[in-house]
Each structure stands twice: as structure tokens, then as C-alpha cells.
Image 1 (cartoon, rainbow, N blue to C red):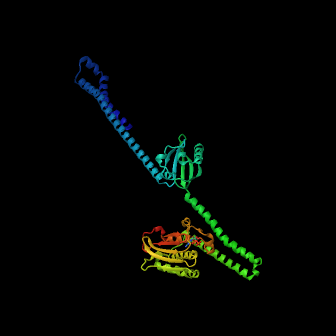
Image 2 (image 1 turned 60 degrees about the horizontal axis):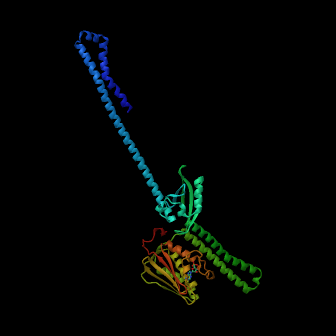
Image 3 (image 1 turned 45 degrees about the horizontal axis):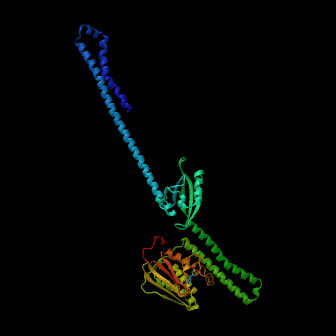
Length: 448
Ligand code: ADP
């Protein structure tokens, strides 16, 4: 722009300079005075023509230069305007892109986000928060957060954070829309003039449940280990205090101690087994296995026990069943546990039947007994660790309360499922559903 302005004057002054160069020597030489007194000659006319032409040309040239300059300025202004427009568009699309990215992040965040203004009204809410608080954004925006969260402690914290700027964390327990525990972190957001507070909500229900389960498990293990130990210790002390002198009593006590120590050993074995299957560290040695092979192994293992108790234990396996894709040792362990339970809880003269058939989900193996059955209220919990319907009976029969929990883990590690149906006074049926070999429908995660 400046370069152009600097280039104009020489061209603009060139005619004037020519006029001056022609006219000045003419005036200085006194020819003008002579021409005025005596009349002009041809030279005078030539000089005057040159000077007049130069004088006329000079403003014309100046006018042209000014127009050129104006046009150049206009072009520059046009370019600058276009550049500014392009810059503005670029900045705008940059901002829109950034907003779109933020929207995607907010939309897909597992944590709930709430933004409240100085008066603690909701100004922003993401889908996770909508789901946690059971309200849509459209209903919530602009409303006092208390109308939605109904949490006075949160209200107090928000007021404090807005006043002091120091972040705070609290736990929110909600009963609706479902039982849940939310961890809320409140921090200051916005500018000094336009203060707002950000609430990050995290669903910690599952984590707290797991924590509670772990505590319960430790308490259960301690209790289960202490019971037989206390018994062994008590009988040992009684023996030492003199019962040893009476051979019949001593024998009886030692038998009890032996039974209790066997129970302790079984409990420790099952605990170790449970910890292995739960940690997912164990590897299944899978191979296509005929269901009849598994059933035969479990039934022959428990046949002496059933016979001793006077229980009719039978297997009904049709020919031509497809092989299941499983670890035979582990599956025999599962079936043995189910048959053992059936024999254990069914009174004398009862019946235990193991049957198998092909179904849509794979092969089903059912262990049915004519025992006492399980109350409806307990059915949902019997696969939990240490859960027993009748604690006394379970302990009396050497039960640990871990068998079904281990069985469930093993079956699920195969991509299968275990179900129970029962009626008090009529008996129970435990059914294991296993994928058949070459069945690709089971989840990949379940293929260790
Ligand atoms: P346990 O070692 O006590 O048998 P399990 O985990 O194998 O532990 O079983 C859990 C509980 O389920 C048992 O204590 C018992 O109350 C109940 N149960 C399991 N199988 C049967 C059955 N066939 N009939 C009645 N109750 C059963």
C-alpha cells in the first residue's frame, strides 16, 4: 500500500517538471518580456505550447493517478474485508468444532455433569446426569437444583464452594429412580463476575456393593474357620483335663475332632478353589466331551454315598447327544457337587435322577431330587458364597456353603448357565446349560 503511494508523485509531477524545464530558461533569458513588447516569434509559440501543454497535462495526470490510487485502495479494502471475513469464518468453524467435540465428550461421559449458576439454578446437564437423577435436561434446565436433587447437603456445599472456591466431595444416596450411591465433587467454574459451580456425579453403587461383599466375605471366612477350630480346641482341652482317662468318651471326642478338622480342610480347599475360579487365573482344558461321560463319572463317584443313605440314584441320558465344549474335570466337579447336594439333602428312600437333553442353548444336564426343596425367598441367593438355607443341616452334613458359588463360576467360565427350580416339600432341580462343541454363539469373553 505504502509502496504504491510512493510511486505516484514522480509520474504526477513529470508534466509539471517538463513545463518548468521549458518555461524557466525562457523567462530567465528575457524572451518573455521581448515577446510581450515586440510580439511573439515561432520559438515563443513553441515554448508557450510546451508550457501550456505541461500545465494542462499535470492535473490530468494527477487526476488519473488519484483514480488509480482510489481503485487500488478499494481493492486493498476489498481484500482486507475478504480476509477478515475468512478469518471470522475460520474462527467460527473452529469454535463450532470445539463445541461439537465438547458436546460429544459430555454426551458419552460415564460421569454425570451438572453446572449451576450463582443462584444454584441448573444451566447445563449431560445425559449421564439425566439418567442418574431420572430427569430430562429440558425439564431440569433453569430450575433450582434442589427441585431435582432434593439434597440439602449438596445445596449447602454448593453455596460454600460458590463463596469460597474450595472444592468439596460428598456422597449422595438415592432411592429413586433406583437405589444408588453417587459420589459428587463440587468445584468452582466460570469467571469472577459470572461464578458457577460444577458438580461431577459418579455412580459408586457397584463399587460400594463390592466393598461390602468383600467385608462380608472376610467376616464369613473368619466365622467359618473359627467354628471348627473352637470345637477342636474345646474337645482337646476336655481330653487334657481328664477325659482321656475314659476310653469311650476319649474316642468319641477324637472322632468329633477328626470330623471338624476334615471340615476345616475341606473349607480351606474350597476357599482356595473359589479364589482361583474367581480370580479368572485358572485355565480350562477344553475338549469336545460327550455329556454321558461327565454324568457317568459324577454318578459313579456319588453312588456309594447314595446307596449308604438308601437313595435311588439313576442317570437318564439319551444316545446321540452332541459333545459339549468343556473341561471334563471341571464339569465333573460341578455335576458331582450337584449330585452330592441332592444326595446330602434328600432323606432316605428318596430319588435323585440325572438327565440330559439337547436344547436351543446347547446341552442341558439336570439333577433332580425328591428332597425338602428350597423356599422361594432363598432361591435367588443360594449361589452366593456361604449362603445356606439351613445352616445347621449344612454344617451337620459337612457343607461349606461354597459349592454352588464355585459351580456357578465354572459353568459361566464355559459360557454356560446354571438354574434352579424348587418346590418346598417336593424337591429341587438344578440344571446346567453348556455350549456344544463348535457352537460359536457363546460370548468370546467366556473362552479362557
Ligand atoms: P453346602 O456346602 O452348604 O451344601 P452349597 O453352596 O452347595 O453349600 O449349597 C448352598 C445351600 O443351598 C445349601 O446349604 C442348601 O441349603 C441349599 N441346597 C443346595 N442344594 C440343595 C438341594 N438339592 N436341596 C435342598 N437344598 C439345597
